[in-house]
Length: 195
Image 1 (tube, rainbow, N blue to C red):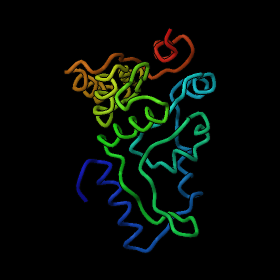
Image 2 (image 1 turned 135 degrees about the vertical axis):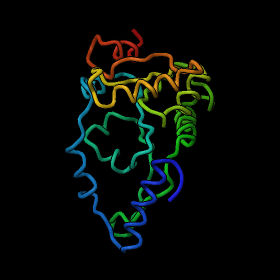
Image 3 (image 1 turned 180 degrees about the horizontal axis):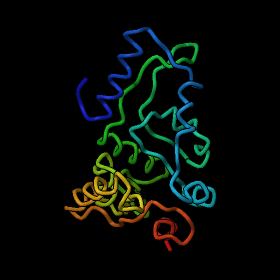
């Protein structure tokens, strides 16, 4: 399989199912939810948020749509699964690549009665290279790009994420860079609540 990391991974995953004539139930898919560790304050932030929040991810859309926190989002965009008539997952649909995230953002804007390049008062929160194109689009069209990272310099991904931030910020597309802590009165919470 070729393409970016997600295209390669999902291509491999799709081939495993298709070539072996296998399926996955939604219950099996959602077993992964128990391994999710949310950033501090994230769920309470979503519960108190008055803004419309969306997920634009390369991850599996149906997995994200079935998470317990999905109810706090207006819409979730991601890579779709293929399913048969019995609602069993048989493969992976068209991967949500980095450039397709821009199409998702434009869809969100249109659905909110805006022109597809009016990102005024839109805040895009991202933490990796796969967010570069979306951050650039939002920043260049009047919105804010927020790069988040884990708090500890001893975190195994801290230095890797710092390199990502530096690479993204070469062109000045990152408006804010802060710890991924959504608790009240934190820098991130204040930014997103426009305080």
